[in-house]
Length: 147
Image (tube, rainbow, N blue to C red; front, top):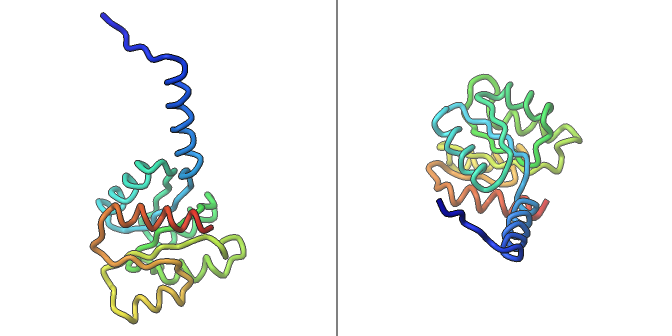
């Protein structure tokens, strides 16, 4: 049985490259989405990007998770059981602890009125469903770089 060997310089270069990526991208992100399959896809996408992900299935759980974990960024669906994404966004933005936390609202409800309501609630971005995982990754990366 042969062993794959790499020299010390190659090993250090790999470690430097990976730690640089992790340092730049690692963030704690809260995803609040009531559809389990979509919640898992969003979580998988952001974990693949190197982020730590916490999830919630409804608005009340999203508030509790936000208070418990202090996420660096929050992704909220609008239409969830109990509190809507708008209500969660408004409540979080009233709390000084989350005043600067970027919030992305995702929703199939993407009329001009819904988009405007999202921004008025305090959202940083509004992504209409359906969307690609790459779009979410790009928006998250951009918001984390700004904040």
